[in-house]
Structure formats: structure tokens, C-alpha cells
Image (cartoon, rainbow, N blue to C red; front, side):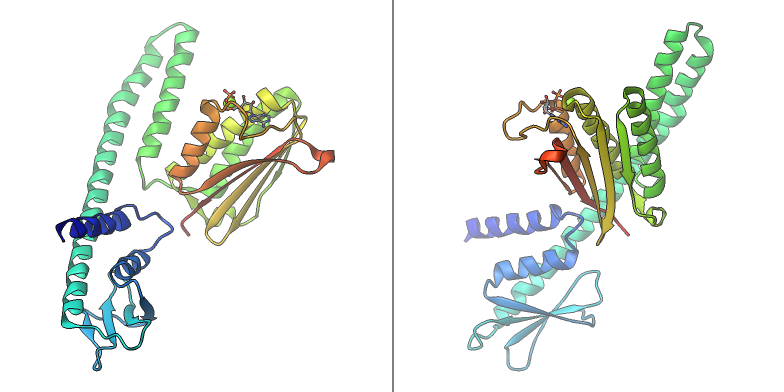
Length: 302
Ligand SMILES: Nc1ncnc2c1ncn2[C@@H]1O[C@H](COP(=O)(O)OP(=O)(O)O)[C@@H](O)[C@H]1O
Ligand SMILES: [Mg+2]
């Protein structure tokens, strides 16, 4: 029994702590309930309740849902099975436990946020300020250039630390596009760019901004280095709270499963994962348009 309880606890902790952006608290709670009542069926009702209670004939349990304006009704699929007082107590205890987890998680998130703000402030007021002074003190151009680039990286790092500073997707994409255009112009590679017109209505967190920037930077580097392409097409789309970015080149193409992956592809995958998103490489099927297509997508907040 002890062991089983351990297993259950592990399940609950994993369900709540590994909850990603796309899964709501309500989904997690539903998952936990079905874990304990595997043949249960959940119906949502649009009003709130404070505590769990049994229906008159014990065929349903009415269960509150945290931070939500609905409650659940849990029934057994087999209409001949009824809920007992023990079931009621179990659900009550589970609800208390999840309340506890959610409060703890919020506290951790808040603590982490405060700590990030503090580090960002120190970096900005202390380290960045000193680097600025240094720029005015040193004489030779090479050192000035070096300090400037350190300052730029530092500003980027400070920006990523601050979860609250957001950018519209339009601003972020405009900067990224300008950088890619500049790089490709120098090499005579043509860039075709498509994006929807409503990008200013949506925002990126610093993580999303920086990760997409670095992902595209590496993809373009790879096309320049390996693809021997004369043309690149970047297409951006928004749909159902997800952003979709596709990059097509007309180069040599390659087999993602049989190439020697370097740091570049590894980092791209990790960054996409950090955004709860996906990335994949495919060779273009059209013989007229050889080369490869890279699709990246991740959820955005509205
Ligand atoms: N757009 C592309 N076209 C052709 N080959 C590519 C492309 N992108 C990546 N590759 C191949 O994938 C390999 C791994 O890329 P990456 O992980 O970035 O490492 P690196 O660029 O350091 O070799 C490259 O060496 C190259 O063979
Ligand atoms: Mg590379």
C-alpha cells in the first residue's frame, strides 16, 4: 500500500509540476481524477462549488475545480457501480493536495521571478554600467568593439531574465528579418518573406523572442554554409494560439536522420523544446525546387 501511495504521489506531482503551457489546471485535475477512477467519465458544469459532494443516489460525485468557474461531475461508465463515502473522502483529500501543489508552484514561480528581477537589476546597474564606463576609458578601436559586443550580449541576457518585458511579435519579427536580409544581401542570396498583417496584436515573451531569433540565426547560417542555395523563403503564420514558421531553401537538401548533427541542430531542437514547440527538417519533394524545408512551431499567449 505504501508503495502504491508513493506511485500515486509521483503521478500527481508529475502531472502538476510538469504541466506545460498548453495544458490547463483543469486538464491536470481531470487527469488525476481519472487516474484514481480509471473507468470514470467527467462532465463539465458551468458553475462553481466549494467542496466535493455525492449525488442523492450516489451515482455521481460533484467536484470543484481550482481557479475556474466550472465544476466536474464524475460518473462510473458502468451504471451499476456507485460511489462510497470513502471515494468522497479520497477526492476531498486529492483536492486539498492539489490546492497545496498549486499554491507551492505559484510561490516557487513568484520566488524565481523575484530572483530573476534581482539578477537583472544587478547586471544592469552594476556590470553594464561599468562596461559603459570602460568604453569611454579605453582608446583602441578593437577593445572598444569587443566591449560593445559584450555589452550587447549582456543586454540580451538582462532582457531574457525579465519575464515581464514583452515585445510585439511584429517588432520582434521585423528585427529578425532585417538581420537575415542584411546577411543574405552580402552573399547575393535572395530572400522571400511572408507574414500576416496582424502581428502587432500579439506578443512574445523574452524567451520566445530570443529563442526564435537564435533558431532562425542558426538555420540561416546552415543554409549559407552547407546548402549552396540561391534562394530562401520564410513564411510566418498564426493559427489557434500557435505560431508557425517555415524556412525553405533551394540548396542541396540533406537527410536529417543520416547527417552528422553538430551543435547547431542540437541547439535548435533544445530551443524549440524550451518553447513547448516542435521543429522538423524535410527535403522538398518537388524536383524543380530541391533543398530542404524546416518547420518550427510553438504556442503563444493571446
Ligand atoms: N539547410 C541545409 N542544407 C543542407 N545541409 C544542411 C542544412 N542544414 C544543416 N545541414 C547539414 O546538417 C549538418 C549539421 O548541422 P549543424 O548541427 O548546424 O552543425 P554544423 O553546421 O556545425 O555542421 C551540417 O553539417 C550539414 O551537413
Ligand atoms: Mg550549423
